[in-house]
Image 1 (cartoon, rainbow, N blue to C red):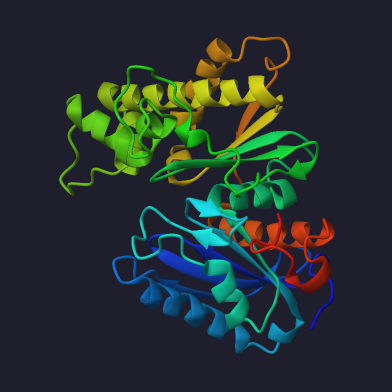
Image 2: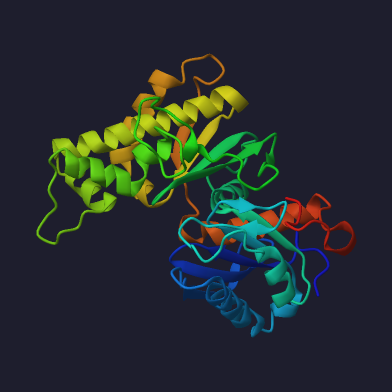
Length: 329
């Protein structure tokens, strides 16, 4: 078995509500072997775990498997890296599920690192993407929800439970609508794809003949000049700008990297986001903050899980016998 996953192969898992992806990733960020299975999200916890084990079995069938020295997991959350458990909102069969221990057992005792999916995307962008070379960065995933992660002083900062940087649940509208998290007026409630599209529909936007009511369809309408669709994206952009500016004021980031399905709208989102940021990021030490699209794409979760595992190795989290339930990231 490889003795240093920071330079050798790492097994990576990207677990979400629709798919479970796995890969063997080398020290240069190249995906050498991959597998993917649908998430049986409405089934019981053991059925979901069987799908994870199926992906790991696909990877283990590769002759490269023995060279994989550790496992990294990026999972939909909430996660608790300190305890090694996950409770994804969109996988009800997993509540405080001991994922780290189950994956460790399924992979022959390999050390396992767990982070939230937003932190995984951040690790990928800092390693290979738009945040590379930046010591202080916020990376966001704007999709069905809004997640994120932080790089501070050149190091990934997942926080004690692996959820640090979760910008989606910063409140930006004190009198706003209730959020699924239990709060009110959260960034996610204003800027996530489903809520962005819902607002457009409530304000009079109508889909085309295909009936597509996704955020992508709203983006297409905005590009075509539909004023309601445009206004929906502008409101989402303002919410994101307020959350980014608040984060920058708190920890002095110099770049915000935005990925996820909603970011695929391109300048329909980024143009009003940059304009709005000028209204919110006004202090001298955050005024030069830049916002750019993510570049690691659909492999961000896998690459980030691999990077988090390598980071944990470098930080000595695996000293001794697989110290810490979550790998100590």
